[in-house]
Length: 142
Image 1 (cartoon, rainbow, N blue to C red):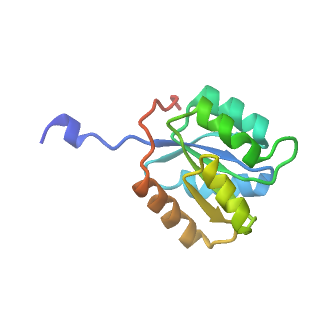
Image 2 (tube, rainbow, N blue to C red):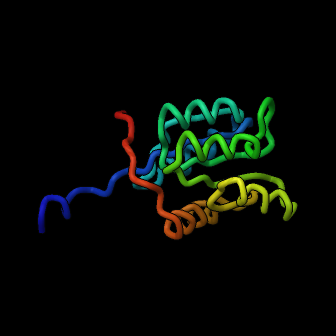
């Protein structure tokens, strides 16, 4: 086996955006504990997530839609421009089909409704990433 084959798989850098501090902390805890996943940034609204995505170039962005100042839906087209290699997963309480369809049209790879148990959220994220692997990128040093 070559040293490349023996090397550990690269970590995927996650940027988490939600206006609720407790939800951001919860997501950071469960996603950050998953092997191969690393939280590299947090944001509280659409303006912050665009700025952080530009700066950090995450492989995965977890994005809420209902936020103050600038919604996740408004931020989606900008995120596609500033972090084109990122896989964007919307995690939102909105369940209206037209909102989900618009998020997908604006560039989300998948839409997960808030509320799934911890045992369901990580498998859903893995399934999304398996279906649409994120582009390789540079993870900032710890």
